Every structure is written in C-alpha cells, then in structure tokens.
Image 1 (cartoon, rainbow, N blue to C red):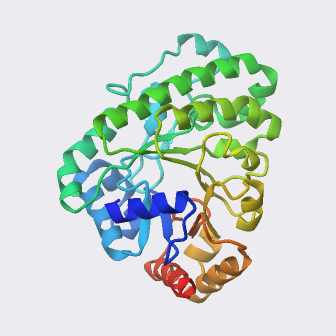
Image 2 (cartoon, rainbow, N blue to C red; image 1 turned 180 degrees about the vertical axis):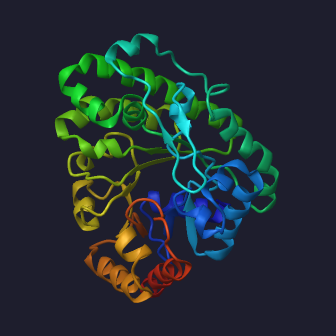
Length: 346
C-alpha cells in the first residue's frame, strides 16, 4: 500500500468525505494465484511469483486499495503450523491444517509457540524482508500485522464442531485454550511490527465469531479480540468476519474495531445503524454470485443499488462481502471500481 492509499484509508476512518469514494478488496491466495496465471502452490513457494502476482494486481487495478497489501501468508495453515499442526498442501487447492487436539486432555501438552522460529511464521516474515527493497522502491510499505483470530485458530487446533460444543460443555477449558492462543497471537502481531516499523494497522480474520450468539460473543470472543486490537496501539484496527454478524455487530466499536469487512447476510445501512456510524464498513457486493459469476451489468446494478440504499457514504469502503472470491474476473473488478467512481461525481 502506498502513502496516498494509506492516507485515504486514514481519512475514511476519521469519517471525512473522500472523493472519489474508495474501493478496497482483501486479496490473497483464494483469488490471486489463478488470476495471475499460476497454481496456489507456486504462489506459496516462490517469492518471485508471489511478488509478481501482487504487483500485477496493483498495476491492473490502480483505483483499488488492496488490503492488507502484499499479504505474506500460507492460507489457513499459517498460525496452526506454529503449534505443530500437520499442514496439507496441494498443487492447486487450498491448504488445510489437521486438528491437533483430539481431546481436552491434550491441552496439557500445548505450549505457546515462538513466532520467531515455529512453524511457517519465520517464512512469512522472511518473504517480506527479502522483497521489502522492491516494495519500497515502488512506493509501498508494510502497513499491517496480520493473523487469524483466536477463535479461528482454536477451531483449527480442536476442530470447529468440537470447539463450539466445548464452549457449552467445558467453558473453563475453552477459555484456557483461548488464553494461550491469544497470548501467542499478541506476540506474533508484535513481532511483525518489530520487524516492520511502518506497521500501523492490525488485521484479524475470524469467521468463527459468526457461529456464536451474543452472550457467547461477549464471553468468548470480545475480551480476546479487544486485547489484540488494542494491544499494539495502532490506528487501523481491521476485522474480517464474513459469517453472520448480527450478534457481534453492535459490539464492534467496543471491541476496538474501526474497520470491518462483513459477509452478505446484512445490509450496510443496517450495519451503519447498529454501529452508530463509528466503524468503517467494507463491503458487501455478493462475492460469488455477482462479482465472480455475474456479468459487468450485474456488478454495475448491484453497486448502484447499494449506493442508493446508503443514507451516508462516509466511513464506507465499497467492496465485496468478504475477500476477493476465486475466479473474480478482471472486467467485473474494473466495473465495480468504475461504477463507484461514476456515482461519486457531484
């Protein structure tokens, strides 16, 4: 992300009117490798191909802000690998981390990983360090420390169904697991900032938050998320959860979140009301059915409908619901950006 884009993002968070209205997308391995003409495994294993794909996206869509920007990641395997989870990689399918906790007794042998040496985390950092001179030469900087959220990581270690069931059956042990995972995640985020002092943002991704109700959010999610969002003292506190958000949305600001990327189960105007207009909302054109599978006309129509529905376009980043979907074509992405620019004209 370059300085101009970062300043635009800061202005949106402050609630200023920005013209033209900004368009932003989360881009990572579900979309970028295939779009750039390579396999997912090539993208993960080659710094040159990873860097080239990101530069190609930036050059192809100059009117879009890509978040977090040059995301160094290994899919869902990144953080679970540090705990010792077996990671399964395929040539052109998404990687998967096998669960590590077969029973709650296994908690006794879990220790807090060191992000400086454990799992894939050193590779994440080294990729950025090796390519940083070229990023900076092109006018970009590393702006975000990034991690999966504590519930998401815990669900990979334990299994999603088992984790959610144990919230009711063994809440004390679930808190124990979340405490360990949160401590690790805080260290991981802090280490990224230590390595890249230009970081002034945190991105956490945690879809498990959408699988629980309001009371469980306040008990099992909010305290740990708030600790992570506020711990580094950064100015941009970005949360991705594209599963249902009605239980958590009224508490986003209290959790320390000021930028939110949601799914498509709720309208932006409703989210504006639930958050009292204090949180930047990034979304939420349907990613699969419109941005990926629709025609440019479908995209244009969806953007126009969303634009007309909003009582206030401040603190809005036009985007799709969730990250950039697999198979989203160039023409549709350009149509979304061009439609927002057209509607932004006085």
